[in-house]
Image (cartoon, rainbow, N blue to C red; front, side, top):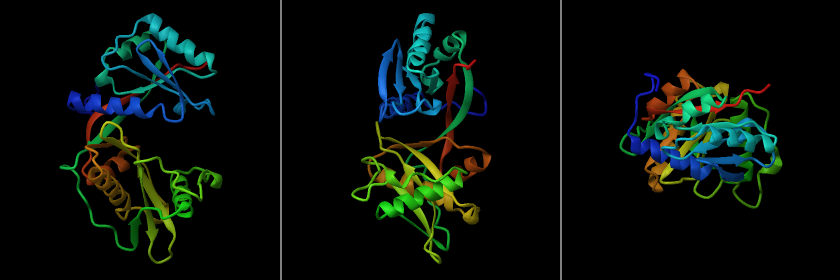
Length: 263
């Protein structure tokens, strides 16, 4: 493991790995291939939505890796994995020998209730749960814009009910003066008392005011109040890392993404 990612307690690595295995099948087809849980999005071949996760302490053979590659190829997809190598340390070498290549090594930051820091809400904005489908959509539009992505389809937001999966938490940020929703984030549906903090996005006009750290802390606090023991996230860069550290998150392990090169 690279030195910049301190080794966390093995129990926490296994907890996060169980979370990944429990949540990856949501909305996807699944298949057991040797010591791997393979997941396939039936609607798209996008690599980030089609990936496998190894069992804890898996020791895959060359035949297991070849079977995994073949399983994804049979569905018109490229073999790809996302997992915590500390929970399955023998897997990386087997995958590399089978032709896969590292795609990314990501710091994983975690936080428990005792480590959480709760900064005051920045002046001029209000943090709240979306009240209806319109606010959920406006929050998603702001998040997509914050990440430089096109807006989502309005039809994905049901006027008759919350599109948030049971147990997930959404927090939006509203500019008090204008009423505009300028950002938000989500704590995903818990599994094994674990949630992922994701989608923290704030419009450029409202950045560097402590808003992202406030969203992160609010999501974690509400998740802990609902029974979650561990919140985790993967920062997208140094700036994001500093934001999450202000809310009490700290590097404890790493996540590894590997993929079969195309061509």
